[in-house]
Image (cartoon, rainbow over all chains, first blue to last red; front, side, top):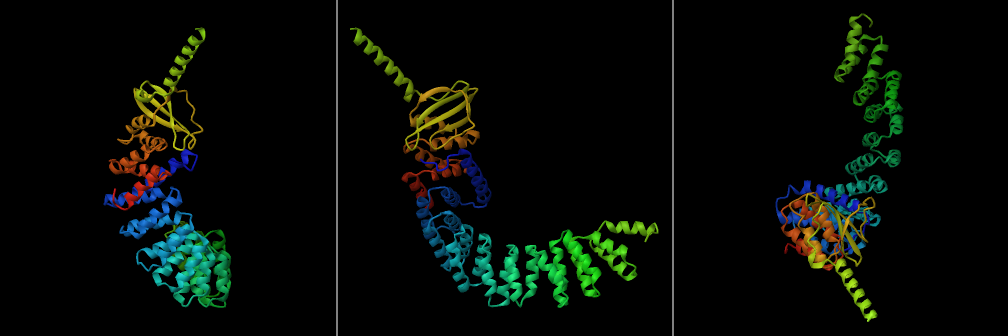
Length: 303
Length: 163
């Protein structure tokens, strides 16, 4: 027998990890032979790849359940051999409803650049589920450029939105900014900016009054990012506008970010009774304890 | 006469030395309290040093050192039981796989590192018939570390449902 790692602790950790993971997942599978097959596949992850590959391939060719075959695909994704990648791609292209999407995701986990590139072709030819799986695979692999290309070359708004949302999740600020320059679908980009945490881009849109609807959406989205800079911007926007819609959007942003201190600050600095009422309502909607401060101050005759 | 007497003495001493190096059939495992150690032929041809700590006549800890495995922070004074046959060492270790205890994992690992066909056979038996699922999974892990064709034959039978 041959142990490829020289450190026993690493191996023991692996055993402990794989066992505990496997244990929790396998408890749901009642067929003992299925359980053993899955455990055997997981054991093959740390086996010499040239030995493991034919065994895993045989499982995929055989009559095992989809559950077992899914695990085989995962093992395949961990085998650092070109044949393993080719096999994964083959299953991805197979059209098998259950397994092809799983194979695509496993290609993402494996992160082999050539196989990931080959997914672009699959995306173009595939149905909605497969396209989602390809986007997911790119996300798992952190391939922002591939998702950007899909968004940039999208055939319809739905396809564009799915790719842009994924870019947001991936924190792909540069790619999202590039899309915002050429896109005719700015709405979804605003949410994606927020999800990616791109304060600068959102601030720019939030201060741009050329399109009030877009501006209001950007202001609200700032609340998703939250934090001191956002809070200061929301106060700045609220105070600097004459538009009720924009003020309302700024308050909504504060609601989303949970910035009740800002709302209280606006309340205290306002002389307009109607506005004060609105701000109090907002504090109430926020469930803020600061509302009690306001009530106490009013009872004391300070406000 | 003097020379032949010297030769006889040397031969006797040599035989005694060989006997102490190879406890062979007499190995029943350590019994007295404290650390004990013995050597076996390791898979790959080197030497595997096995350590067992005995308390109240029962093993409580197992450690292994060899060409393919090391435990840098492990250093104890141990009673040397010498070189032991692979089968006998495995027979002793096999007793501590089940029921599950702190020794189970170490026993499986130690067995897997012995030379010859026996480790694969033992691990295959554990995989097939151990009552504890986690022990079976650990046996599978150690079997997966093997380079031997026999080990992969076990995997093949397992995955094709013919085991």
